[in-house]
Length: 580
Image (tube, rainbow, N blue to C red; front, side, top):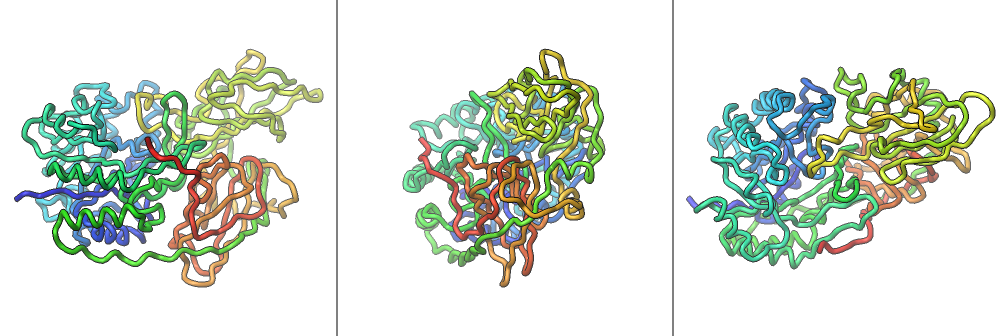
């Protein structure tokens, strides 16, 4: 029978589990029949050999819920997913191997993929259409035509799926330029774009004859980088293009239908002419907002799809009201320097060690967060990073801030002090690994080589891991040394306060005016990064992560702290700029 895919992307790992079904009902109400999701390897196997398919990562529950709500599923299991996600979903522990060649048939890579697929396919295979499940298609890798470093790789990934019991339609997905390089025999090629160039869908016929046409990623908006604008894509232009695609008889998947949030430290980055980290929000100017609310795009698409389908659609669910809980006072603080002795034993090393190669987490290294490198110097002089800082280091002599090192600033003057030895400290932030392009193998973080003082490489480091995992945040509560915040204080430090909720908790947004740069935790959950350079000015706080009564808020601020944060009922994602 003829069947047209009207799909939308929504990622279970970017949406609180309590809201999965709400977003699916909104998909159905918009006229969609298929849900598309990526699978993030770096969340399901954070440490090598330890798999997690629980809670918000319960893929079986997510796919079963899609089926219950009448949605087919296109699964995109990678292993690489791009998706503005740290290292395109690949686990950072792969980079412990100095010879690692990601996305190739390099043995160290394929052995890791095989072990992961062995576990993942136990979840996926029983949920295929032929076994009574919702999965009607599975994508082989992701936009490999834009990488194309190994002609044998796509066949390897295809066979890795087939040999483990994948029997549904296989697909590849590429932009126009990558199309011919991303093909693999036995998989339907699909195309990704935002503007429909004349002849683009016909171009698919030149790479595969007489096959159904599908746009796997029709980009409904775009993502934002720190320091840039909040991108928006015109709703009328979007709906007109979707209409034009449907007129050709093609199938379509909206990327994104609902973007959600890069909670925690999971945002990716771009490296074109320069390194640019992605913001925490993955609102994407998509069909639903970051918090799952309707946009004009939703109602315009609903009208279009109902005409195409020719029958009435389910009613859109009521939207959840948002709460404004007002000002929250962060009344206590503790300096990072006071936390160190209480929390962690440093790693001792003669030379700097990058984050991934630190002997932590059962020898799988540190994936995210910060690392503090400490060494002893005598006198001052000229500090040079030789571009070995990934991605940004605050430099301190004892506890006095002297400046920053990053991609653009590679040298600093260290003031001469009084006679004697002093501690030189570099607090290095991993701002997110690049998720697209040819530089994936170079995404090690922390200090990736020697740092020089007066042309001599520094030696004998104490290295503190500041991954800020839940256990770390919990132990922070017990540390003695929390005190009242003075009138003026410069970080790095942790601040804490309470958000009081009287009624049933609702979604809200935290506005961090007066704060400079850092991370927010609510009841131990990492909401993500904030940074005063914008564009994003509010962090999404889902209602299900709050409880009635007191909710603990902890902020790690790198530099200048405000005294309060505001809980508001409207997000502010920054000054807008239309996508060209």
